[in-house]
Amino acid sequence: MAVWKVVQGWVRCFVDNQEEISTRYAGHPIELPFYYAMTEDLPTGACSQRRSDPDFPLEVKLQGIKGFYAWYKGLSGEKEFEKELLDRGMIAAIGELDAEKLAGFHMGCVLWANDDRDVAEFHDTLWAFQRGKTFFTTKEGWIGTAEGTIREGDLIVLVAGLDMPLVLSPVGENYLLVGHGYVHGLMDGEQWPETLDQLKLINIV
Image 1 (cartoon, rainbow, N blue to C red):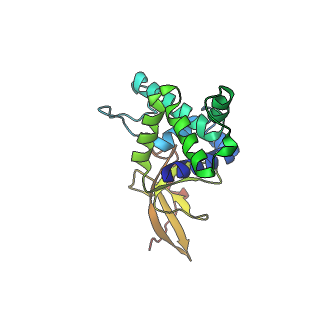
Image 2: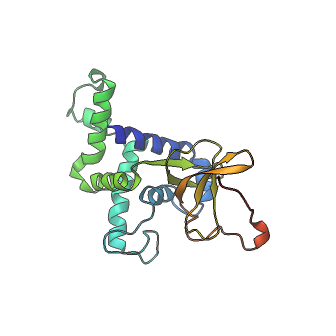
Image 3: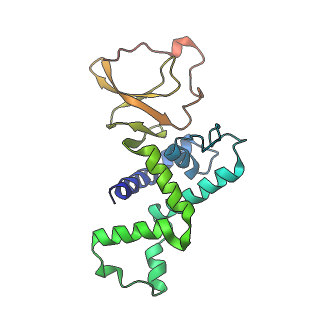
């Protein structure tokens, strides 16, 4: 239940910031960047490629995305599982359930509706990747996850010599290292400045 409540918050955060996110990731279905952020676009099984690579095995990609979409729709409220089951007469009135039981019921509906194991498997995959991490959005529309706790005002920074962005907290004129992160669209040098005059020297304490 604790994991469920956390990911519900992550989905709400994503939905609430879709305007900025859709502008940043224009040209993609809006949910795909969220899918890659949740899985950190990591290889699956014996495959060494990123999921977003055009030549990533299609059957593996489709299986993961299928489970993700059903999981996402349930958590974002696009699919009202409880109403569907109420209409079928399969459950008693929702008003008779307290908040804890209703949340648990909703979790069960999303993860095991129609015996679709792809949804539960995606949820397990997400939990394995994201334990101890924080989901975030930036005011520019970037989305990602990072180790530790991120606070409003922290910065996502690309650092020379590193393949992943860092999360830094301003401390006066210096910066405190919070941890490394996954930010979809910043992992393969796509946003690295073309000239050195665009770089800045900073002190990390």
